[in-house]
Amino acid sequence: MFKTLIALSVSLAAASPTFADDILVDASGLQSAHTNVASAMAVARPGDRLLLLPGHYPPFLFEVGVSVIGLGEDAASVVVDRVDLHVSEPSIGYTAVLSNLTAGDGSALNAVPISGNEQSPGVVVIDGVFVDGGVFIGGGADGFHLHMSGSAVEPGPGDGFLGAGVHLGGSAGFSFEIIDSRLAGWDADDDLGVPAGDALHLSGPVRGRLVRTEVLGGDGSSMQPSGGDAVRRFVSGAAVHLRVDGGTLVRGGDAQLGGLAGAALDVGGVLEFGDASVQGGSGAVSGLAFAGDLALESLPGSLHLSVEPAQIAGIGAPAIQSGAQLTLSVDVPADSAALFLALDLGLPAPSPATLISVHSPAMLILNSSASFVVPDIGVDMPGVMLYANAWVRATPGSKLQVSNTVSRRLDLVADIPQG
Image 1: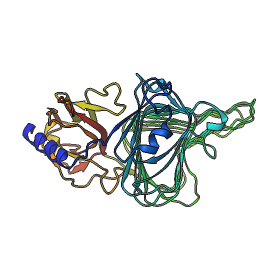
Image 2: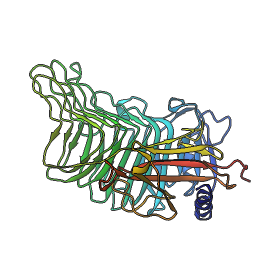
Image 3: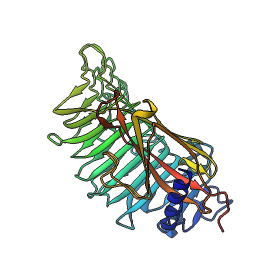
Image 4: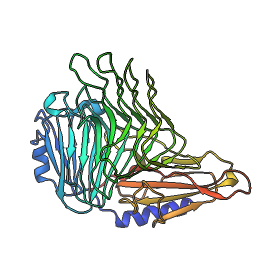
């Protein structure tokens, strides 16, 4: 297996472009002539990294397929007032990364600090970002994908877009996955006269999945008694395809006397439901766990993927150093499962909201767990996506079923310094 991993890594390295440039951005001007992100974005080319030293930065237009990474100890160290997401270079097949920073300054002007519409085919990665406000990413041609991991969206009363903390979709071909994150609607505010907010709106026939993520509708108040929904279909009649995978909590907001508690999932279409908790809010009128026109499908098993170390400071996304151990396991007996792993520099087709197809390179492990050491291949490999499925036998002799898909974005870091 170790030889297999080396072969996989070498083949990836041969196909992997290295970062063109690292461009340092320093709000103080002491370590770089670029004191704002817009200045660095103007000279950046696809594949570059814009590295932001701790500080406070004005809004910028994200128009190039680059990585914007905060270099602080945590997301609070780097604050960007607003990010307008309209990647245009290259217009097809880009990857735009926002990592390890805070988006939003809490002002009414920047109530939706991450926003963009009419997205072209490509990938947006939001990793380790705290959003002080709402998120709106709409439109998008067939082939647009949003990957959010290790992030939190916490809007204030009335912030967000059209009543929700996060609003996604608007067209067919829009896909998303939200992993290890928290999406919250705001609580009702009597002083402002603002009703409770929904956590997530899905607009149009989108595909997506939630993994180990909290999605919580806002609670009602005495004067605004109804709770907000956790997930709601925004366009009437549109059929969404949503996977709710293991470790996820989806809960509607609580109601006060005389109000209606929020629903957990007020959507129509297909819901694939795994080892997750889906609850309507509590109150005078009980909220619904499931509402709308839903075809429910049960997911058989939950594959748990762990990566150690989880993160290297200053990278933003999980970075697997050469020599680190990577472990995957599924909670069944060793002779009842087979693991299928795929490494991909982009995103697979169909999107990771569905079962992964056969990728190249890939490997099959006839066991319920796998652990190996990452070899040093002498080059950095940024933005590698690791996907895994397991084929699971629920009971001895029963038919094999396929587990949920798990994924991690990895930046493989070489021991040998790159010249």
